[in-house]
Amino acid sequence: MANFEFNMPDAGEGLTEAEIVAWRVQPGETVEINQILVEIETAKSLVELPSPFAGTVSQLLAEEGQTVDVGTPIIVVSSDGAAPVQTPTPPVADAETVAAVVDTASSISTEAVAEDKPGAVLVGYGTKGHGGSRRRGGAARVPAPAAVTPTPAPAAPRPSSVPAAAASTIIAKPPIRKLAKDLGVDLSLVEATGLVGEITRDDVVRQATQASVFRNIETPEWSDEREEKIPVKGVRKAIAKAMVNSAFTAPHVSLFVDVDATRTMEFVKRLKNSTDFTGVRVSPLLIMAKAMIWAVRRNPMVNSSWGDQEISVHHYVNLGIAAATPRGLVVPNVKEAQAMSLLELAQALEQLTLTARDGKTSPAEMSNGTITITNIGVFGMDTGTPILNSGEAAIVALGTIKQKPWIVDGEVRPRFVTTIGASFDHRIVDGDVASRFLADVASIIEEPALLLE
Image (cartoon, rainbow, N blue to C red; front, side, top):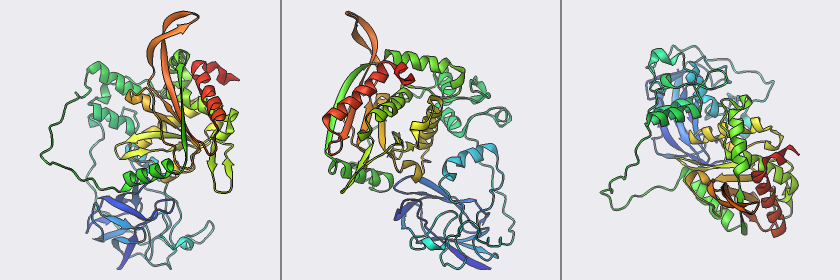
C-alpha cells in the first residue's frame, strides 16, 4: 500500500496561499474519487477540493484555520493504486447534492497530474512550479486504481424544513431551499410559480411575508470583551489591497444625477407579469444593467483599462456586480453581457448573485471585468461615491428608488425617483465623456423604450 501526499493547489490566478476552512474527512476514513476532502478559502472565493484518488485517509497535515502556502502537502491518502488518475465521470448523486456543487464545478479542470511528478495535487488544480506536468488532450490516460469499498456515510440533513416525504414533490434550487430555511418557511406550503413548477425566490419571500415569519430585529448585548481582534486574511485582505490600489492609483472623479424612474418601475412590473419571465427574478437592477451596456456602446472610453504605454478599449462588456456576502465584498461579472437578450441577462444576474451570496463564486467569475455596477439602493442609500474596481475605468452606483414630488408638465406629481452616482478614472475618461455616459444611463432609466433602438 502506497502513501500519496496531496499539495495545496493554486485555485486560480496565481494565488500563493489559502486557508483551511473545514476538513470533510478524518484519518481512517475511506474516500472515493471526487469525494470532497476539504473546504478552503482563497483571497478570491470559497473552494471545495475533491479527491483524485480512492483510498484511506492516513493523516491531515494542516489544521482548520491554518493558512497554507500553495504547493505545501495538506493530506496523506493510502491506496493500493499507483497514482492519481484523470478525473472520471462523478458518481451519480441525488438532485440536491448535484445542484449544490454545480457552482464550484466550473472552476475545476478535468486535467490530471502526471504520475511521474512528486507531490500530486487535488483533482483539477496545478501545483506552483509544476505547470508543465499536466496532461493535454489526447495523452494516454493513467490506469485507474484498484477499487476500494467505501464506508457508508451518514445521511446529510436536508437543507430545508420540508418533511422528507413531501420533499420529493418540491422543485426548488439549493439557494431557494436555504432562503426558505433561513426565513422559517415550509416549502410544502409555498405556491410555486416557476415555469416548470419550481419554487422561486419571490414565492418564498411572499410566503414569509404572509406568514409574518421574518425574524425580528434585535439589539445584541454588548460583548464582555473590550476588544475583538479579527485577522486580516482571505477575502478581506484581498478587498483591502484592491481598494487601496484603486484609490491611490486611479484619480477618481464622481458625478451624480437625479432620475425619474417611474417608467422603469412600470416596465419591471410588466416584465414580472410576462410569461417569458416566469420564474426569473426581475428588478430595476436589470434595467440599470441594460442601460449601462447601451451607454457603453455610445461612449466606449468608459469601458477601458489603463496601461503604462497604452489604453485598452474593450469592445465587449464583462459587467461586474458588486455583491455583499457574509465573507465580504466580491465583484463577479457577467461575461459578454453585450450579446445577451434582456431575459438572458436577467437569468445571468440572478445566478451570479445567488452564487456570490452562497460563497461559491469562482476566481474565473471575478476576473476580466470591464465595468461595474453597485446597487446601494438595496440598503436604503440614496447615492454614494464608489471606488473603481481595480483595472476598470468606471463604476456606477444605483441608489434607492422611492416616491418623491416631481414636476411633470408644470405640475407637481408623485414619481419614483432615484439618484445615480458614478466614479471614473480621470486618466482615461474626461469630464465630457463621463457626463454623456451618465446622461445616457439616466435616459434609459427615464424611458426604457429607448432600448428598442
